Length: 176
Image (cartoon, rainbow, N blue to C red; front, side):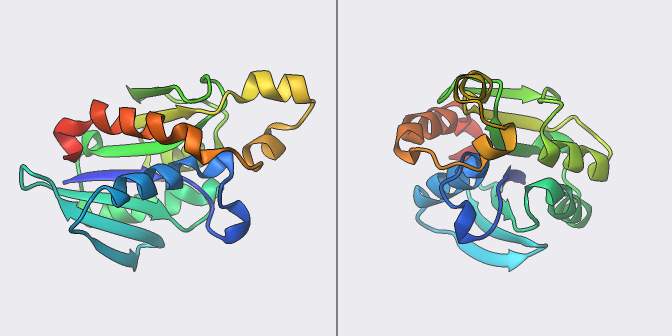
């Protein structure tokens, strides 16, 4: 079993915001899967399917709001008891150039409140983090805008289609 948690905020006012890029990635990946099951459980929308190797894959969008993402992640972790190496957390990263990404175990931005909550509630930081760049630091300085306002502002999701596809290609041994 592998678990992909895409972080974001529930509700239409957050749709299309940079902070919801984790949700957008999960939706993009789910759109590529023909046979899947969708459930609402563990304070999450959960999409599951079986990959070509016969392994169960869970695509999860916590519905607990970004800063409380640890609630949903810890509930699912306690129920399914996966190894931490089988958990991937997908989220926006202000410190990475827009449309770039990094997949790193145990490396994350120390200022991301959703990640801080997951680490606190799960008592580990050894997850696989899929950090999707939204180029926030340079844009915040140029636009004289707060980090909160920047991550909650709308972005052009179409420009990330290539990024999402590249992430899937990087993980195809697991996902497909």
